[in-house]
Image (cartoon, rainbow, N blue to C red):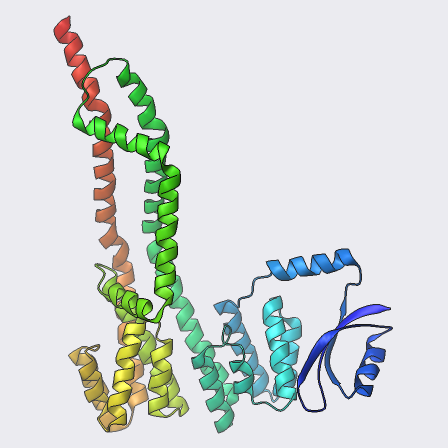
Length: 411
């Protein structure tokens, strides 16, 4: 007898799952059918206690997330299979069985089960919001309703590839500043724990009045050594409090607004969000999504709640009968050049084409800003490092010079 894990649906269509011992998968399927349960999946489960612990440990350690690259590959594969005429249920099932990400495999198997029970694909995907966002589900819904599901997957793959490239460029631009800041933090820790205490012992032997910079350094080092645990608790508490605050609706809105006003990087955050908005708007509008629904979805997927709130105000303006360009001008998000391009698109009926041009414009600005980011931050980092070295040099070498002068004067 082996232990099997199964999922199925009862006579009323409700989901049933559990584990049961049986001689084989076929015999278990017969038992379930006799109980008026239609089996959907039957999998062999380890029978030994040690095996159960190992399975549980693997499930605990398994990463329950789907990377952007995996979603891109999934969309490409679904586009190719849909275009080739492969049935959706068969395509989802095949991709689920061959996927290396165990969590994504489980999600795709659940989607397949929902499709077999008669649900639409958009509803099936919407049951997994951690994997498939609102934009993803909306595009699939439009593709299903228009009979162009393959094109929906194609457009999603293009959009996700652009999102991946944007994230990649941001990581490349911030890698050097983060590395320098980390090195400075490590350097300050080593200086406070090891360097300054060693010099403090030497200075203490002379019983002389030390200069102010040296006393400040020694006092800081002693406080760091004695109360490092308190500093750790304070830093951890501040980080946890900030995370909790930023997870609230008011906190997230406030923080997203602050990010747009940060020096050097604030404009970059704004242009990234606007590039994402205009690109997504063009894609959804071209796919046939109604204007009001397009604005609602974009407000949630733009990546900044403050800008999302401004987009919702645009939606309210359109809902009152105002032109899109007038609502966009009232939001204060767009430059006169961009507003002029929107007006032309509205007048000519080619709003999607003009929004793609606007998205290209913003993405070029983002590329330029990212290339200049390191050049803008580098002088600040150099000044900070120079200040740290200056304070250290004054604190260490001033007493040496004074002691040396006193020794020469006494001689």
